[in-house]
Image 1 (tube, helix red, strand yellow):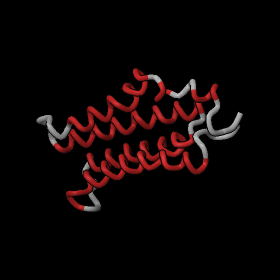
Image 2 (tube, helix red, strand yellow; image 1 turned 90 degrees about the vertical axis):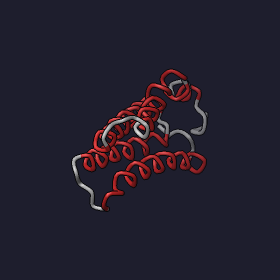
Image 3 (cartoon, helix red, strand yellow; image 1 turned 120 degrees about the vertical axis):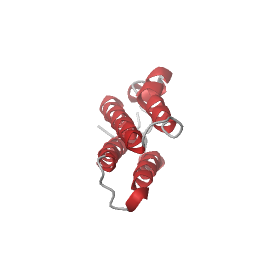
Image 4 (cartoon, one colour; image 1 turned 180 degrees about the vertical axis):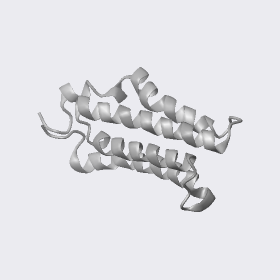
Length: 128
C-alpha cells in the first residue's frame, strides 16, 4: 500500500462524508460569507469569521489525526492562526489600517485552499 491512497485512511476522511464535510467546512464558510449580507456590525462579523476559522481548524486537526491527510496538517494551524488574527482585529488591532479585516479573512481562506497543493507533490497522506 502506498502513501498516496491508503484505503483505511481514505475511508476515515471527514471530507468524504457529505454531512461531516458540510458540518466542519461548508457551514462555517456559509455563516462567514453570510456576514456580508446580514445586518450586523463589522466587529460582530469579524468575530463570526474568527469562530468559523476556529471551527474549521479543529475539523482539520481532527481529520489529520483520524486519517493523516497531509493538507490537514498544514490547514489546521493556518485556520487556527486565522481565527486568532480575526479575533485580534475584532478586538481593535488593525496594524494595516481599516482594510486589516479583509486582509486577514481573505489571506486565511486563500492559504487554507493553497494547502491542497502540497498533496500532488508529497502525496495525500503522511506516512506512518
